[in-house]
Each structure stands twice: as structure tokens, then as C-alpha cells.
Image (cartoon, rainbow, N blue to C red; front, side):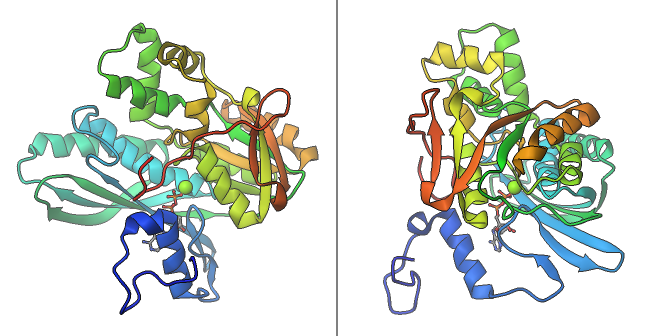
Length: 347
Ligand code: ADP
Ligand code: MG
């Protein structure tokens, strides 16, 4: 890290803003060293995987913090409960696994109404029921002001989990569903009043408040030969960067190939921005981004769509690391795009 060890005794304190979220995680990863032999996947993927009698366990945890991940004014507690679980299920999906159990740690202000807590559980249990997940425990604490929800999910995978690191030059890059929808929804919410009709804004806001974890799609993608996979929580630019970094490759993405819903295009036009901006730099779509050998990509996409009903689109190709990650226009010219999301860093 720039030839120094921020935070070493004797040196001046270094703020997290300089290290960034990724830098901090990397620091922890180096400090821990290699994991024990029965850890198949440690820090650096969507979920950890450990060898367990009878199969492979997947473990993942994710936190939602009030005023960082959500605002009480723009989401219902029912939606929040569902989303807290959905984002964790998404990480299990990104390994090609099947979620089974969840634990919920809640930090709540004492002013919160009991009915609100009931509503939160309502949303969470509905999402759990949809995916055959059992809530088996958690923790409860008071907090002065802002709510914090931490979900831990345990799942399993029958074969080998799909990691971020299996992409090779020549592989096709694919995504499920459509991109930029959640970021468009957030933009609509943050603007307060929006000049578009409800049939434009409603699906966008719904996507932001209620992401759908692509569990079946992840499982089918694993079975159909996905070489690397990640869920899109921080935006395509950032999350493709994780696949590239872990796999030691670069990539090229054609902006015109990105699957963008008509409502997202309409909202982008009203705000005078390029339709692909949210798709590339906006977070929280919770679609799956994956790679596949070029001769298997079309078959994989067709199988996912047949078995789950979810569309899948080839958006680019994996390249050697020396080419970096490029987003290109129809003429193949590189286009500068904004970065995705990272905690501790200002956009
Ligand atoms: P995702 O966006 O898929 O939830 P994260 O970016 O949160 O993934 O985490 C990337 C990797 O770093 C994961 O393997 C996660 O378990 C690990 N990780 C994140 N924060 C910490 C931490 N504070 N200590 C140890 N490992 C962490
Ligand atoms: Mg993830």
C-alpha cells in the first residue's frame, strides 16, 4: 500500500477515507494470512466456502445501516426486511449455491414502534419463505438513533462454488436481467418530484426498494459452466473490476449491449444523462455478472432463460490483464465511465 503501513505505531493516524473499503479488506486479508485447509474460499469472494461433512457450506454476512443503505422516509420496514435478506441471498446466489439458514442481528432505537419491528419481520420472512430459508437466530441491541440490520446466511453448494477468479481471456461476459434500474429508482426517489408518469417511475422505485436475488439463475449458471461470477451490488464498473482483479484479467464491455429497461432509458432522458451511466456506475441491481467459455455462453444463457424465465445478455468479453477494463462505444472507442460505489470514499 504505497510503500507504507498506514496505522503502524509511531506513524500519524490514517483515516479510512484514504484506505477505502477495498484497502481495508485487503489489509485484513493480509493480516490473516492463508486460511486453514478446510476453507475452500476465504476473504475476497461473495461468500466464504468451507468443506463440511456431506458437502460445502457457504457463509455470508451483510449489514444495512440507516442513512447509509436506506432512509426510513423512502422505504417501508416490510421492504427493508425483505431487502436485508435479499442482499445476502444474492451473495450465496453469486457462488451458485442454495441458501438455507439465516441469523438476524438487530440494533434498534427504543423509539421504534413494535408494529414497525413486526413489519420488518413480515418482509424478511416472506423473502425467506420464497427461497426456502429458515431464520434460526440472531441478536438484539438498542442503538441511540439509526437502525442497523446485519444478516448472516448459511447455504450449501453441491458441486464446486463459482468464484470471482475463474475468468480467462476470450470468455464471454454475461449479466442477468437489466442494469441501472435500482440506481434510476434511487435517483427518482431522491429528486422528490419527477416529471415522468407513474408507469415509468414505479418499476424503478420498486427495483431499488425490493431487489430480487437471482438464486435459481446462479445455480443454473454454475451447472451450465460459468467460469466466474459475482452479484452486482456496487455497480458493473466496480464488480467487473473484482472479477478482473481476482482472475488476473482485463475486459471489454460494449455500452450498446447493456440490457437497460425502457423505464430506465426514459428516466435517463428526462434527467439528460446517458442511459448507460446508471447501468455502469449505479449499485444495488443485484443481478449476476458472470463469465463463460465463448463456445458455452449462448447455451448457458438459453438454459438460464428457459429454466428461470430471466433474460441473460452477453455484454462483452474477457481480455488479458494488460488491456485493463474498457467500456466501448459502437465504433470500439473507449468511453470514460464513472466508478461504482465504495464505502469511506466520496463519489
Ligand atoms: P459483497 O459486496 O459481495 O458483499 P464485500 O465487498 O462486502 O462483498 O466483501 C468482499 C470480501 O471481503 C468478502 O469475502 C467478505 O467476507 C470480506 N470482508 C468484508 N469485510 C470484512 C471484514 N471487516 N473482515 C473480514 N473480511 C471482510
Ligand atoms: Mg457480492
